[in-house]
Length: 377
Image 1 (cartoon, helix red, strand yellow):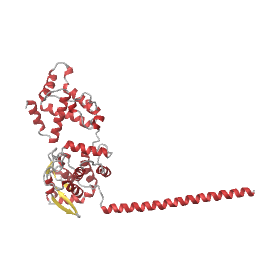
Image 2: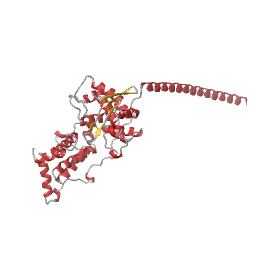
Image 3: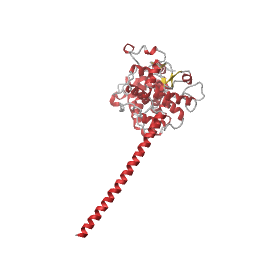
Image 4: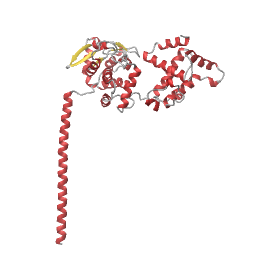
């Protein structure tokens, strides 16, 4: 390995494994697009342009980064080599999202920062990206996605339930193994099963999280696991651990089939936080479940964490806020209410028809009387 590769690898060490993969892939895409042979050449071209007296050379990497980002957003792939062309039809037709394009800048900024070479683009040189972020996934949207899971139905549904119930980032969800679920401490509260998955360290922020699975997720995950006793919890078609890019693409495609815009894996995390916050759960509690940083000096619940089973009990008390499917008896009540409404509607329709016939009969009798009076005169 060359010096450029060593420095880049050292810079990537502080990032999550998924981010490392994405940054390397995007740097490679940049080099293939503009015919750069390796990281040493990528460094040299920017370094030489910075030393040039010609002002047109001062932005070698910046100008090409800008060009690549706008090609991605505009779907202008005419000059792209076949080896880096996107394979998804909707990307070929509509281009990449602005967020995906901005990752090219982040990846190159990471590389040149590791080489101590200046690299900077102004706000006007970047594609405009909506700041609204991912939309919260409502229960109605979840129901539609549940019916649109397509291939690998049990896996996709298990993932949806798993993330819906703990609000972890997708990279953390995919890090679980089958043993983590089988060996989790089980609690039965109110006749329903809850699993305490124990302490994990999140990949992105390196903060501890203490996820819990509710009864909906427990049922879906156990159905998906089946007879397996070890290995990654979520598998791809080749039997390997499901990768973050593949999972993100899959969940995004399901949302598109369900007719939902701007919904992806992170929408489940937003839903978890929003639902519990709306139910009045303290942020110090749900942040601990989902692995968000908490200031210890401001935390009034620090003693609660040390009581065995107390966090699971609190979770169970507020689980109704996270449910997406009603109990069977509630469904039956809704069906009976619907049948009663239909009967009432049928009775009302009959009354309306009787009233219309009566009015028509009165109108005809009035016309006959008027005709008789006219003849008498």
